[in-house]
Image 1 (cartoon, rainbow, N blue to C red):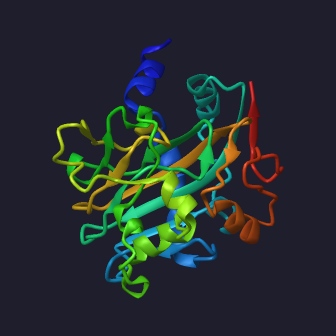
Image 2 (image 1 turned 45 degrees about the vertical axis):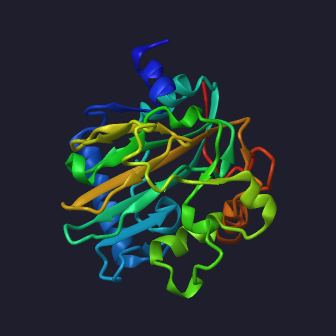
Amino acid sequence: MTPLSKSLATDGFVKVPGFVDSNFVHNILNSINLAAQVRSSPFFRDLSLDQTESFLSDIWSSHFVRDFTASYIPSSLPSLMSSLMNCPSLILLQDTWFKRTTSCTTPIPWHHDQSIEGPFYSTWISLTDIPAASSLHFARGSHKSGLRYLPSSFFDTDSCVDELSAMESFYRSFHYSSSTDYTDHFCPVPSDIESNSDYDIVALPSAIGDLIIFNGLTLHSLPSSFTNSCGFVLRWVSAESVVSPYSKDAQIASDYLDVSLRSGEPITDDFFLRFNF
């Protein structure tokens, strides 16, 4: 086991400094700026609390945005992920990006990614320098807890849907159900996670071109921004990973992408790029 794979297995996250060059960063930033301008993707969102565009995001810009760079996958990343995931065949599930300004007061709350059952990893590429106060935060080792988490507000039956923020509305559209099967499967993220000594919280600052790899089950968050920042994310699954029955991703993706995704089954549609090693 390499030091990189050992850290990823133990902590649930790892940083690779300077993974991409300035050329890659420049091309992706230009493409993200284009995506934010044309807004042709049905997944494009203004997630800022006051809808002032201080927090913009999109999914599958590579598919929906004409002239988005075709070189959005770093050439050495698929083989690295194949090695770290111990998967000779892996699938690129999704590309997404997050762009925030200094006035952004909208955090991404503590959560983990649970649209897939089985190996599921995200690779965050920093396109700007991001200091610790505004960077990804992780609960070290939380991917090994055996628990499945959702935001605590999902368990509050008294909360008014009309008063939800853009961030929570977006998250709920993919992950919320009021069924007892659903709530029995998940538990709320602890409200005191950042002060609770049972959790080892790590802020991971990054520089332009750094790569952060993390297990989808590692609890993570993104605090309010105090700087202009941008990150590009690619999400990876194995050929054996299956679509979670507790996620609406399959139906939403099927509707917008014209792909075949079935709950509880592996991803086989040719839309999703596959890499074999």
